[in-house]
Image (cartoon, rainbow, N blue to C red; front, side, top):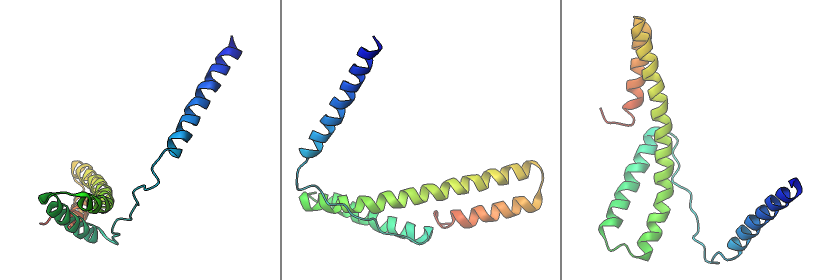
Length: 130
């Protein structure tokens, strides 16, 4: 019974692996090339990249959206994804800073509240205009 079960599992695994291999062989030879998103050294540069990519995407979507436009949108998507990931990291850190400020305020720790509040404002001002 155990041998039959192991044989069935092995046969199933081989079927999945060979199906995946065949699918890769059947992939078109003219696969879409991939790009690297615009890199940023800071969150300020990330925001500038995002604004620029958003403007380009907005302009492309306002047109006919032909094959060349779709190609351009594909290349823009890398910058958009990278920028949003960077912003998400920054926002997570800012969330932690606000949580620290919150707990410090519960303990009436004036200096800590000021430090965390200032750090939060400096960070958020780079993402959201004051």
